[in-house]
Amino acid sequence: MGSQPDVLIAGASLGGVAAALAAARNGLRVLLLAEGEWIGGQLTSQGVPPDEHGWIEEQGCTASYRNLRNRIRAHYGLKNPGNGWVSPVCHEPRVSQEILRELTARAGVEIWERSTVTAVDMNGDWVREALVRRDGKEVSVAAKWFLDATELGDLLPLCGAEFESGSPGRPENAQAFSWCFAMEHFEGQDHRIPRPARYGYWRDYVPKLSPPWPGKLLDWTTPHPRTMEPMKYRFAPHEEAPVAFSGLWTYRRLIDRSLFEPARYASDICLVNWPLIDYLGGDLCTASPGERERRLAEAREMSECVFYWLQNDAPRPDGGTGWPGLRLAGEALGTDDGFAREPYIRESRRIRALRTVVEEDVSAEARPGRNLAEVYPDSVGVGSYRIDLHPSVSGDNYVDVASLPFQIPLGALVPVRLRNLLPACKNLGTTHVTNGCYRLHPVEWNIGEAAGLLAAYCQARNTEPHAMAEDFADFQRLLEKEGVQLEWPTDLDLSKGDPHRHAY
Image 1 (cartoon, helix red, strand yellow):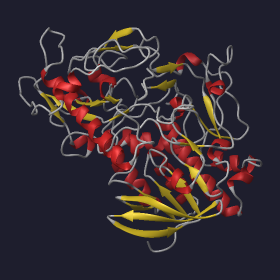
Image 2 (tube, rainbow, N blue to C red; image 1 turned 60 degrees about the vertical axis):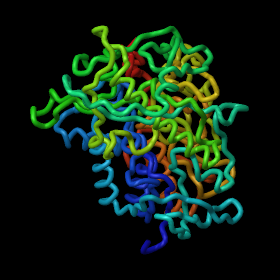
Image 3 (cartoon, rainbow, N blue to C red; image 1 turned 90 degrees about the vertical axis):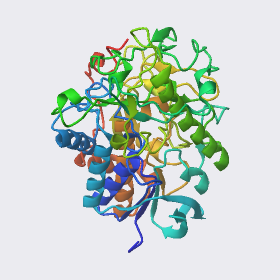
Image 4 (cartoon, rainbow, N blue to C red; image 1 turned 180 degrees about the horizontal axis):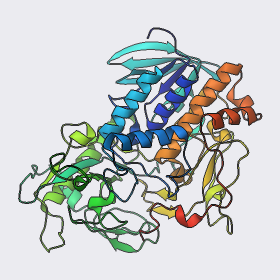
C-alpha cells in the first residue's frame, strides 16, 4: 500500500466493515483484509438477511447501521423487498455488498481481497507487524492497531492472545455452521440437478443430540427450539403468507416478486438457512487446516444434498414428493451456482477480556422482575436477541431462552493482556452461551464500530484501551456523537422485542 496503515483489520466481516468505516471517518488510515472478494460477512458473502430485534425500526442500533438499512431500502424503493418474516429488511446480498463497497470507497478504506494474516511479529504485549498472504504472495504490514474481525477469531492464536472456544471444558463444542443457498421456483419446469455422490448418507442421517432429534435431519419435523417438542415446518413455494411460521419459503425470502413490476423477477427468491443445513460434523476453530477444509467441503456437499432432496424426495402438502421446478439462484448471492460464497459462521474464538458477559447478566430467568440486562457503566452500545444457540457439534441440542435487552461493555473489547489488539466481530468477551445473543447483525456491527472508534480515540489521545477501561466517560461522549446508543430506556415494553414473538 502507499503508506503504513494506522489500523490493520483482519477479516472483512460485518463487524470488520463497521470498524473500518468508524476508524476511517475519524482520521485513521485503514487497511481491511478480505479473505475472499466480498466484504460484509454474514450479511453478504454468507447470504443471511439481518436477524434483528423487535424495536429495530425505532432504536437499538447505531446510526451507521440504520443508514445501511435505509440505503438498502432506498435501492429497492421498498421497506422489505423479500417480504420475509424473519427480518424487516430481507434483500439480496449482492445489494448490501454494493452499498458496503460504496461506503468504504467514500471513506477511503483500502481493501485487500484474497488476503489473510499468516503470522505476526510481537514486541512483548504489543503487535508490531502482520505477515499477510495476498494472492499467493506474502508481505509484512506494520500498524499501530490490529483488529480481529475474522469470522473465527483467527488472529487471536497468531498473536498468542488468551482466548476461549466452544463451551467450558469442551473447546470443540461450537454451534453448527451452515452453507446457505438461494433458489427460485418455476411450476411445470424441471431443473433437477444430478444426484450428489453422498446423497444416500445425508438423506438417512439422524443427528445424535441431547435432547434427541425427532428423526432424520432431512424431514419437515424438527425440535421446537424453545420447548424441544417435535414441530412440523411447512414449505409451499409461492403459496405462503409472510407471517411468522407460515412456512420456510417466506422465512428468509430475499425477493417477493409480487412487490415488483412483472418483468423484474421471474420468481420469488428464497434463501435457505434452515435447521436442515446445520452441519454437525465438527467445528472449525479447533480443526487443523486440512480438517477445516474437509469439513467446509462436507458442509457444502450436505447443502447440495438438501437441495436435491427438495427437488426430488421432500414431502409436499398435496401428498406428492419433490419440487422439480426449484432452481438454484446465484445472481442474488453473486455466485454462478446459487450457493453462498462462504459458510454462515455462528461462533468464534472469544478473547479473554477485562469483562466477560455471563448468562446471569442477560438471561431473563436469572433477572426476574426486571426488563433490562445488567447495566454496564462502560457501555459502548446496545443489542437484543434471545440466547439462541443452534445444535452443537458435540451433541447439544438447541438452547433458545429469553434474554433481556443488553449493553455491550467496553471491558469485553479489551484483552486481558495484549495492548493494541481489539476484537471487532463475534470474538469479544462472551461465553459460549451469551455468544448466542451477541452474534447477530446489528450487535456485530456495533461491536466493530466501537472497536474502530476505540482505536481512533486512543490514537488521537496517545492512550490505550486498558487505560480507557477505567476512564471511559470521554470516550462515551464520542460514541454518542457518532450516533451510538449506549442504553435502553428503563420503561421498555418487552412484549415488542422478540422478532419471532408471533411465531410460536
